[in-house]
Length: 380
Figure 1 (cartoon, rainbow, N blue to C red):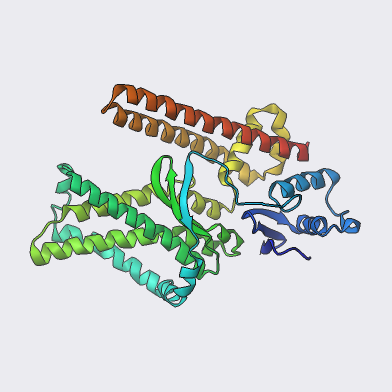
Figure 2 (cartoon, one colour):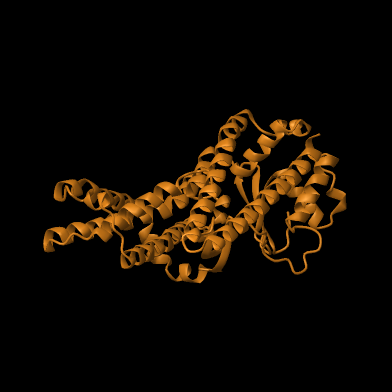
């Protein structure tokens, strides 16, 4: 099969392929028959268009391939910039050259034996702390943050998140994946960093996918442990009790726990998706729930396996409830924060936030309905 340079494909399972459009970095997972169909369309080989696919399937695939930019007018195709107020990307850069220059160091850092030793190293201070300083928990019973402590803690957390994303990038590079971008974004209006490691979908090994997904948490755990080592050293050698280091370590561990919550697209979501071997877990769960609630789309149930249906019935409602809770808590917290300074400003902020969330919800319903209609046309 011949493809132009902007199309890249790789077999990930027997008869399953990930096809990437390098012009806009959109990808699709398809079978061998669908891949051959795409090759015939792109090469305009009309004699081989007839395949194992029905006319309805061919029509559906043509629509999907055109939407992803594989066929049709490809002039001035750019990266997808669809707006999502829950994930607003601000700036980013391609780290490929930096990673290439550090390839030998990366190979050393990702050595499995070193990783195991580092995990053992990280566990030691947690067991030692209770023996060395039984009053280490006291600061949390009398928390009094001053402005300088808040600033330092915030700075340390931001730096930690940078190293977290760097952990994803390094491990992805180690397994021969491509890291397209590292940058800064607003995640549910909270400053955060991101790393595009979507190339892991091309990995054949589920183990490799899981390792890359957990690499950021691994780095965070190391940094949290180092802060405790420094705390213990200062306590023993200089009789200094640095509460900032304790605050940082606990805040870091809290972020790790929050990060593994699988109901929004953080590390926990991707980890669960890889463990269950279900791509687009969140979107498929919502589609399945719509197909149950709306009788018109009931035939869509046929395209899901029994295992998937069980997963979607559990995951879908929990994801909806958690997302709703997250939005409501963010709105209330921001409203209270602004209200303390100005009542009118607080009311204005509440109206703006409510409007933005409403737009997000409308876009979600519209996109879900569009996807439902496309799949419905295929199976009805």
